Image 1: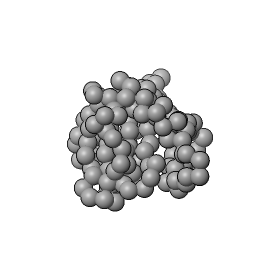
Image 2: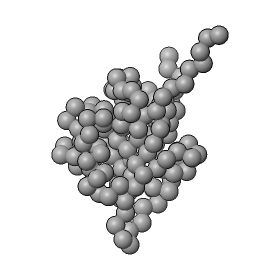
Image 3: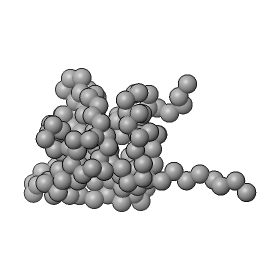
Length: 143
């Protein structure tokens, strides 16, 4: 039996195929995944209905399962607010580098062959897309 919070078999399989520097996109319900993601990335549809599943719930499960090296979010246009981005920063490990990319630079980053997994949610919050870069698992070496 698994002991992590994450139990979704397709997400676990995609993460098992990923490695250091692989990227995982947690996408909100408005993200154009068909045209703005790597064609080789596994796509998992958790968008049951508007508001279900939320990106923060996916992030919670992922943080219990993988090491995150870096995160990227879409830069907000002038005058826009996205409280969910502040929530992500609080949820991510302290001191983790977070980049804010211009909209099309964010799309380009997601379209990279490094993006191995796209998780689509039903989250209706604007600018709730989060691109995670997988880090290295540090294992104690036997003496």
